[in-house]
Image 1 (tube, rainbow, N blue to C red):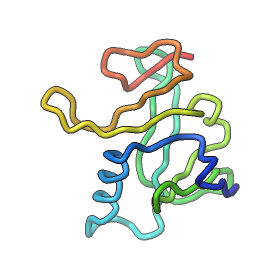
Image 2: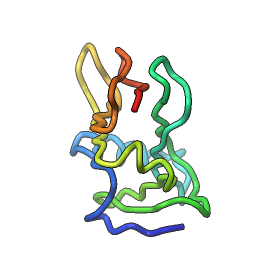
Image 3: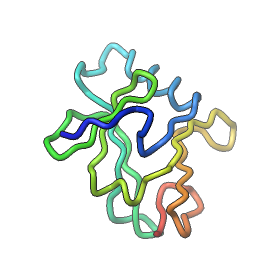
Length: 116
């Protein structure tokens, strides 16, 4: 596992995303040792989908910390996610995590998949 300095983390979390992730991590059923995993997988209407969840570290992960949140990402995913901003929306029309990815050439209407 590669440790990356938080100052050079490949992605950004907005204050709203940080607040929501920390709220989820403080839940009584949160498994100690789990980290926030951000990645991509094939699929979705635009070709690739975002993967976001909590997971245990694996050998081939890059690990970095953002504002006290341990974050995991497969090194191979960084070419798709470098510079991406994870936000959390509280609005009436949109509620949940959103991805602002400068590497995406297009994305679907709901924002959960993209093309590069």
